Image 1: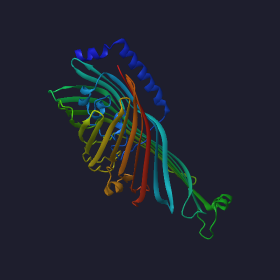
Image 2: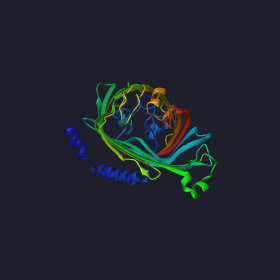
Image 3: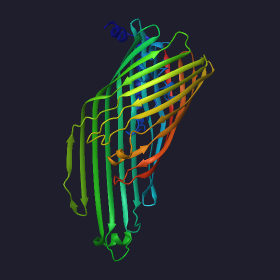
Image 4: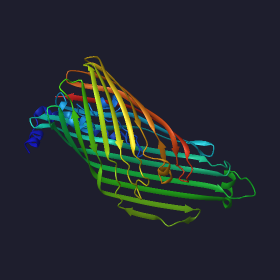
Length: 437
């Protein structure tokens, strides 16, 4: 209890910093959404320093982002600090090849999203932290009209809106287990919301004797049929996500080894689905259904190694494993296969006031061919690179960087069992800042 009393009885300066930083975070949250998807586990790289190193951070984690990557690492943070990172610009492009006859179907998005805010504070009883993380966020909007295979007789209007957001917020505690071994635990409250709206309108001439165009169809309604379909789906999840971390860091400071174990546990979920369809003047019955399907999430095991050849250079590598996860009838209708991701990163100080960071990483899909047949839309392994620069002052830092990933694979976007080639590319330009006090 004394630990928490110390945390809340902050000095006047500390409370002022927290108040200003929290206000800036809430203000920036009005500006938009970032992109990710439910078929990958490494869609968003969190943190000012970790973002430039491709997420290879489990064996480092000695700043505010450590509460997310490895809570044990915050014991090694040089001081108390507050940090915020923001995806200043993110664009994602998906090209479904040959879906519209011989034409490609393209789905893209461009957004802004703050994704991390955290505070760490050292006390005589250990290090504690508070953080707010958006590890997954998606906003897709598509409004498109196109012609079918018989261009003179068929037209389609397609409206699509898909929003996915996952929020994790909670507390961290870390301390020395032995002289060289650090241990920490982050406990997040997990909330996820998903909303999908799909509207499809089709017109079709049915006169088989003549090849009528759309103008003639409009002039002669007896030769025109129409189909209007509308689907609305909403899903909300409530749960917890514990992250248990270990960090081995010998006194010589030449290397460190990190390990984390984590799993999201859902205790309540609600789904709502509404479907409406009309053909010509006939309106089919409106279908409304409620569900309480609770999805399962994979066990996450991450191992990292960091090597410090000199005071100016850091090299790091991470291996992340996600276990196989069973399907459910509503949200994840496919069995998510085991996934392994790799990340390597480097940091080099050109001077005491400027550092360059770079990294390479994978973002492999949890979908296989059976998953496509069972309801997943995309099966693409992504490969990415990161680059950032950080400017330091006496008590603060500002980071500007980018992450770019691309990959190709297959998609069952038509839901008809036909797999189409799919190409995906994502560019994220991010801004981060931190302040030590």
